[in-house]
Length: 135
Image: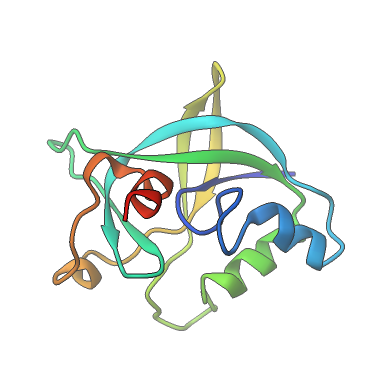
């Protein structure tokens, strides 16, 4: 089992809901561990957000959910985020350590390259779901 931090359309109730993605592929349902914040900045790409990693001096955070997932779900998430070995795409797969529900866990997550956000508006507060609902 692995952990994943999701901050955008993979969150529950969103268009790429991680629970429904697992169900569609007959993979065990992810276990929601909790909500947390990750150092970063969130940008609006229209129908989805993109996160960049914050610099050491930037206090901005992105809100997301941490799930414990079956290893088989990683390939599904990579497909949704269009992350392919040897191919430079918008999203990349990285690992980060986060505090959630009183526990420190290593998570997979999908930020975008910093250059990709040059002309995109920043999402104040770093919460995609709240931003999308407010539009």
